[in-house]
Amino acid sequence: MRKYLYIYKSEVMTNLQYIVDILVGFISYCIIIFIFLNLWNYIYSDPSELINGYNMNQMIWYVTITEILWMSISGRKLCRKICNDVRSGNIAYNINKPYNYVEYSLFNHLGVVTIRFVCVFVLGIAMGIIFLRSIPSLNVLQIAGFLLTCLLATVINILLIVAIGLISFFIEDANPFYWLYSKLILVVGTIFPVEFFPGVIQPIIKASPIYVVSYGPARLFVNFETSQFINVIVAQIIYLIISFSICHFIYSKGVKRLNVNGG
Amino acid sequence: MAVITVKNLSKSFKVKTKEKGLKGSLKSIIKTKYKIIKAVKNISFSVEKGEMIAFIGPNGAGKSTSIKMMTGILYPDKGSIDILGLNPVKERKKLAYEIGCVFGQKEQLWTHLTPYDNFRFFGAIYDIPNSRVEKKINELKELFELDDFINTPVRNLSLGQRIRCEIVASLIHEPKILFLDEPTIGLDPVVKENIRVLIKRMNKEYKTTVVLTSHDVSDIEKLCKRVIIVNNGSIVLDDTMENLKYHYLNKKIVDAKMKEQVNLDDEDGITILKDKGYNLKIEVDTKKKSVSDALKLLNPDNIIDINISNVPLEQIISDIYKEGDK
Image (cartoon, rainbow over all chains, first blue to last red; front, side, top):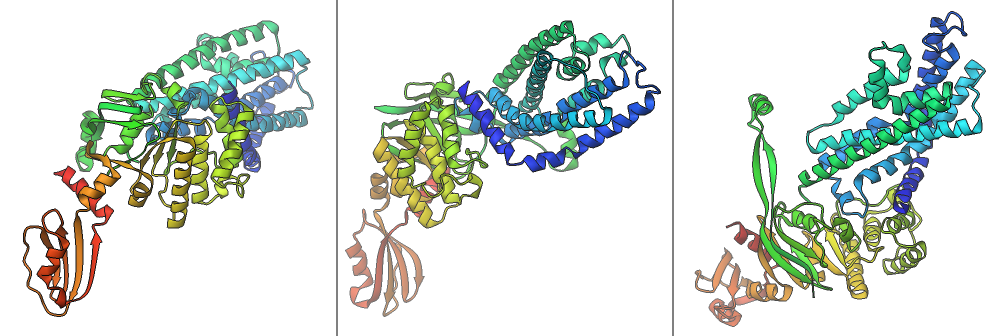
């Protein structure tokens, strides 16, 4: 484990050198939140009115949190990196080290996410407080529980993106698969809560990764219920095992097909 | 004691092929054709502990593929590899603790971190306790003269400094075998020489077995006592550097400037390389004709200036490559 913590630490140290670049990149976050703020302001004639169980403040906080999770993951960069590693043969230089490439990618990218998460979290919460002048009341334990679900959501999201990237072992380019995955998470899980979709497809969404990587933590932030927390954590643990197993399965099959030319 | 034993090793790659033009591109969507390339064909050799061997060959000869199989990166199709009693296919992770790799064309260091942070990182991934890593860093810092730049981010180092750090990073876990894949590529002659001295010093100090690939003949000549030449996936020569020189250096090049024009014809043991009347360049096979006999043919009284030299090692090696092609 020490080696993976070192991989994580080294990536954090690397990213700290780009802190200004990262902050500049969050301008788009502010714009998105500002757009949704105005959109929901317009849709809700009365802020206390409930639409599918959400009042206006809850709705805006929901988008704020899902966008924090979405913006901090930097998934396209991760998927592209894994695809390039596999296709260019760069992965070879990780294979001859005493660590596993899947875990290496996970901890390495967690290093990227940590800095981004801290920055965008502070920014998102500050924007929410400034514009809404209120924040969902959570006690210390509930905040810890919420942050734990955020961490697990991030880990699962990274592992699923790593699995998509590893498909490059079998096909030329895995990026279109990432595009599908990201759009699914963005449209179905980030912008609208599950309750906004027709009753028929709600169980499908709740069984999909959207529930564990996006909806679950955000829902807890706007309305923390212990039973909901347990549901989210259990679902996240199941997804963690599934995504981890998928990554290792694809990697173990793919690495035998590795072609590294030249040198 | 052999630390590397390779027996009948073979590896093929399946490469996609496509007919030319747009028609070919459309056809390949429906039916993809593949071509099998035999990168390594049935090679066998062994390396003793503490040996420094050169594993050389032209581009595409199969040397890097062989090294990648020995380090557990690629899976062989046939044959067996034994590295320090370990099978790289089945015990890749275990093997990683015993070997070190430096790929001159590939950075393994974190460019935004300093060499010191990088060495600490490598110490951690090889599960070495912090106190031992510190000791090792200090030791290697002295040996590889890193004092001036150990705290400068790698991205700001010169290529020569970076290669030194790459080698040190691969030595942190005290590997028993070091694979150096073109470690001096792109370096200027002074830095190259410096790196060679350091590699030699390391081999002497730690008795590390070194497998070196390089296109630079001076690297091979100055570092290795044994050379394995690979071409078209097969070993075309496996011999000591001394034997290589002895067998192939029996040919001498005689470059003479004459007072009067000499009419000399090719004969057994003598090959005329250049004949410009007063300037003559001949190759003498000393196994068939002695240099003095060759000079007699030229008439020593007729010679204004003469230079007798060995065939350059580059020439010897490229001739061996060509023989392999046949």
